[in-house]
Image (cartoon, rainbow, N blue to C red; front, side, top):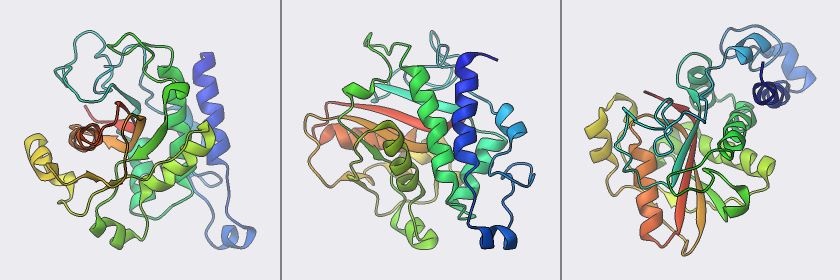
Length: 252
């Protein structure tokens, strides 16, 4: 196993081994969200089999794997300066997202953040189309996140990407700017590519001044890219200098 892969596994292991209080653990023992093995949120076996995206070969524009030269998922026309995705959206990563969002397993937020931080670290070694590193923490003024709709927030009682973003910013020493709002839009999960874009058009807005800022935009899953692209357009329209996107997982 490579040094980078081992570093990634060590980082995930540290996040996944966080357990609840003794009393809660007796009543509701921690189990792996993927295979239900008792002990950790993501067990060692499931961590070892995570579908990591090799940043060297990934599309720098949409984050799809094996799209560095010719991407089958985009036309290299995204508004983001670069898009970095950590994992393929299947198996354990899909369970991590659904358990955080729908099962209220909030302890997964730092685990997801650790996976995203690992991908950002790896992406820093590879260039975007502008010739600079796809990610450079020193070149980022602040991080923000694609927000949940007001309906989703009311249903869950929290914004899952706010939790992930706060954990990632703590780990990487980046300031968090909670500047995006999305009052309404239909649930994206049942919509196709064109429907997603139409559903989100004009629904994300920026509530604070971001003029001149180089921003890191965080999301959980990139499917068609509609959410990330709409949020990026809103940020650039309010004067942001650049937007680099990062997500836990990529659908392709």
